[in-house]
Length: 280
Image (cartoon, rainbow, N blue to C red; front, side):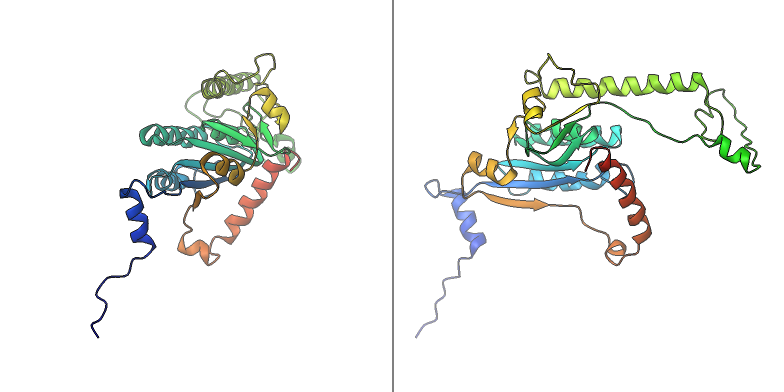
């Protein structure tokens, strides 16, 4: 008996055939990217350097019908927030792919900046959104070092080089200078939200004073488009049989074996402090 010389048709072959044969229905795919944690440059936290390649893959691999951002972030670096948000918008515009943000516990400050980069925002009934403001925090340790007989010696070229030194008494001029910087960053944040949420914000409410809103109140204020969870909303939009493809940052070899355990512990404590600001 002659052997069957017809090659086997696997899932990849059938998927390819569906793309070329018009009467065969294809299930749509939603690319899912998790944006979780404090936003910060460097190895710790959520940064453009770390999440950028993930977003590039999510928008380009397999021609997804949409990209879903699952956000759980209390904020962090304004610059990193802006870089990530700008990358999301560039990829969405270049590929013609809509972006949906789904807030879990919190999307506050820089976390809300990322959410606003999406075309639509959805949240849980207990999600915390907003905090459209800028903060700078530090410590004053001049009394502490004096009690312990420590003298602070600083030499600079430039009158503003040693601004807000925590080991020196607070200088009113330095405080005014810092407030000016924070106000400029705040204006950039406000402009970003107004552009991205144009026509949706409740102008009768003061949405830019740093306060947060929860669930339905965030929807009423226009900070979100509705209440809903990722899979439920995406299936309603793209069909019950739509596929979900998850994308995430790859861990380095050393981190897999716990080589960065100390850094991870410090980062976890700092991140926990940021989340507790919103009662989480």
